[in-house]
Image (cartoon, rainbow, N blue to C red; front, side):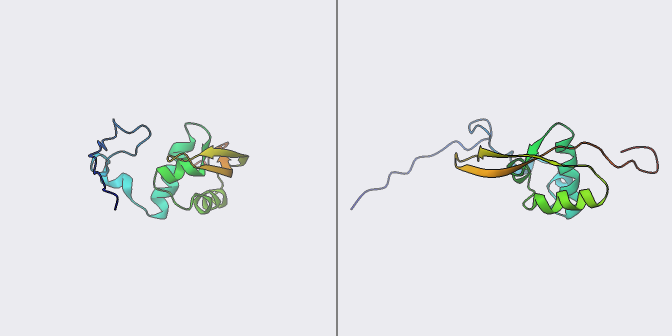
Length: 113
């Protein structure tokens, strides 16, 4: 019978490259899984440049295609600009991953986006 050696691992975000932040360090309002909170996170992320569905998953948005569809229905111009092959955080390749870009935002009545 093989013996199992248990090794203590440092799981702090500084020790693991690309690790998600500790939930305690995230403001409570930021970790909501409501549809509105997820749409808000997607818009915040897209304002910094193109993002993939895997990027959204890392931010707690599990059905980004649904949230993107909802944002498009509200008037946001968010095309799928490419389908790419990318690696997830564990190194597994994923083919045909959508890459989204925010082209235009809906202007609110108060003149802001």
